[in-house]
Image (cartoon, rainbow, N blue to C red; front, side):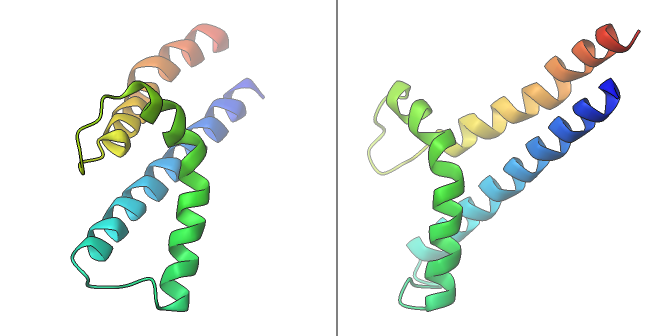
Length: 98
């Protein structure tokens, strides 16, 4: 049962990582005018992605210094997720499951 909890946490972290990467790619497409928010589908996807990532980004944006138009928050969150997945969760799982 304990192992299942760590699998669920791992899956949720992977989903969060995927959502962040998709949002970053979509923001580049919007910035370079490949797609625009006049399209209903693009606007719906962007609104959904923004609603999913805003609770994660907002506390980090308060801590991060202002770099002008460059937003490094997604990169900081991605690095944090990778550290959680690779360095923090496996030792905790092994300690609790042994």
